Image 1 (cartoon, rainbow, N blue to C red):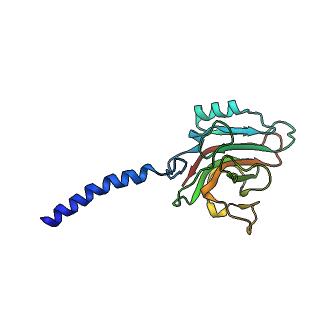
Image 2: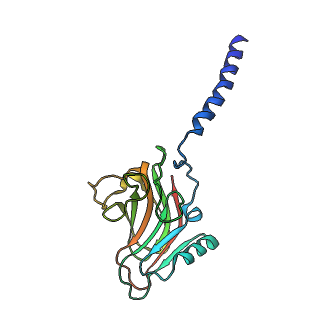
Image 3: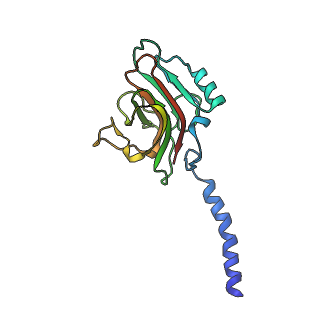
Length: 196
């Protein structure tokens, strides 16, 4: 009986201690793998696309899909990006992913190869690194049907080089889906982006 009482007392003391510890967790840390960034995040566009930011996000909210189409005779690259943690612009504080996070899962359809850049936060921790090179992976063409691809964080290497620096998931800022050489009418559609 005495042992049972001691166990119950320790159990009830443990609950408030756990609550206090969890209340100090970083607000920028993501550990929920059920968040679909297509549904929860504002997407941004740059380059010769038929759709603008307003149109992309309107369709995203109505149909749950991102769709980008290259203009006729496009000049320059098309860059579609989103923040990992929602911000007022396409720049903001980096996100500290949980140690348990191992990969990103993307369902997409694309008529051309896409480079997926994972941009890290700047040294000050106030925004994203701009310009230069970034850890990235290739999304192969999947023109006829949607494909789901599981990309381990360890696959994101500087400039896509196998010996390049690996992505630091503790300061992940945003994803950029880049078509470096779009042709007229090239399309990219994204149904889901889950961080797992």
